[in-house]
Image 1 (tube, rainbow, N blue to C red):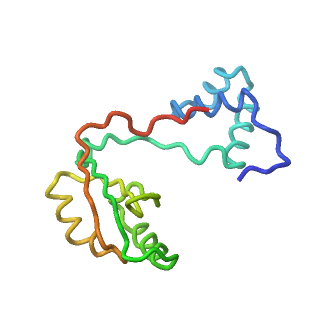
Image 2: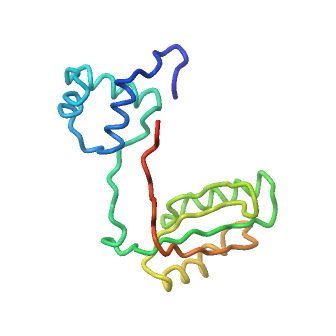
Image 3: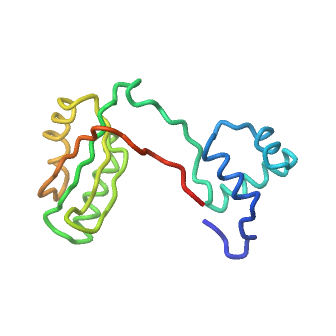
Length: 158
């Protein structure tokens, strides 16, 4: 993570992060040209951003419908107990399920929200009946089938 003794982010660091966030396929040479740095200096700066935890990774966005995962489902989960042990058991089990894209501990009526991609409603019904309700401590689930993705994985504003 970031080291308090390291230099603060400057406008070039912020621009590098914005450019990589918009297009992670930029070559170091193209990135250097866009921020008016030498390729070697650009590479060192980007490496420092990774080393200090400002950049966590560069990823390809796969088109879900092209890999037969066109249905997006959000599931609210309520556990039967609110204890550190029940949260840890649930979280450990969820980490092992490849069909869960995101899992967030939340405040409010639910304990967790899960983001899941499946082929279709029948595929989700199978997962729900065999996997989700069998997770440790699950008392209740509420399912939301996404009708339209208005904003998904928008870039961070900084």
